[in-house]
Image (cartoon, rainbow, N blue to C red; front, side, top):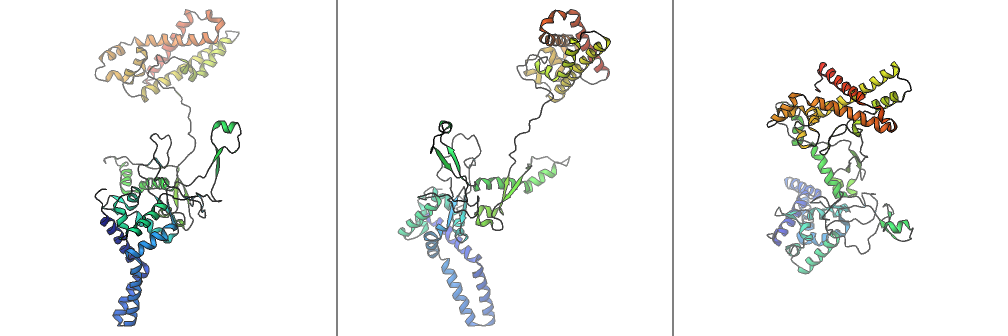
Length: 459
């Protein structure tokens, strides 16, 4: 940036004005008329066209245009990052920018301070928007004239005019607009306003006149960042990456898309009346979904690093229907065939859910996950069986193939049932003897053998 001279700035301004002249519809029309008049030999028409072309050229002469732009028309526009007109196109409230705001070191939410580079916007009289276009011209492909003015670059002053006094006035006027140098900031009746208490204490004590009046403005520049990001979904690279995902032989590349987008249009048929960026977006502003998250009940709990056993309260909860039925059968006054069948069905429910849980862990967790957990060893043989295929797991494979871990699982299951019943029936602990314990072990063993016969792959 230090290599930029005032001559570089002057050249960019002159080139910009020449391009504006060349694109001027009246100028192009007069050039056409002049050519036709020359071909027709009509000297009067030639003179008239030449005179009009000269007058138009004077309007775009460097000194003439700069004086008109920097002394008069510059105050027709407002340069901003937050727009009042986007709230309502007829609003006459002030706009605000972020040029002088220091970005916070820690950000807990997305704001206009989040992007590393935020493009400025402009609103106001369309006849002055060409000045904003000039300010956005790059100097030597480095920084824009707008950024050089913000950085107070020493070459800017002389680049604006050969007359130092005029140049100082031009620069001062540009800065007034760029830095929101308004003495009395004003809102408009079309703006929304919020009364915000200065503190929780003042709110709870109902103190009067202890609040701030907030006027929310549309974050036009931040919305443009979102707009540009969403629009890149139509880029050629993104389109190709999306199509290649359908081809088996093609090299797959990541691509992105956006779901549940909404669009709000600002400015109606004349989005330029809102701002320059709004005009470039055709008035469209994308709204990302802001619905609350959908919480889904998980069928099974996850195994944490410090979990010692899966036979705990969480497993009892997901098997609660079976336990409820088991409690009812124990509370029954008679030990009839119907009650015994109900007790048998209760264990079938509990064991069915237990085996589904084991299958879920076996198929969803990565192979070898049990190396970094605290589960009892015999439970890891059951829940992480493919770990035996990994390199360096010979001891794990040997213990797995010996199968003694199944006996330990039976005892874990029986102890789990015993603890649940003792917690439920605190006054009848003595009723649960070694005989019942062995019966619960047999229930688990029977479920294992049934699963193996069906070749479910759980054991």
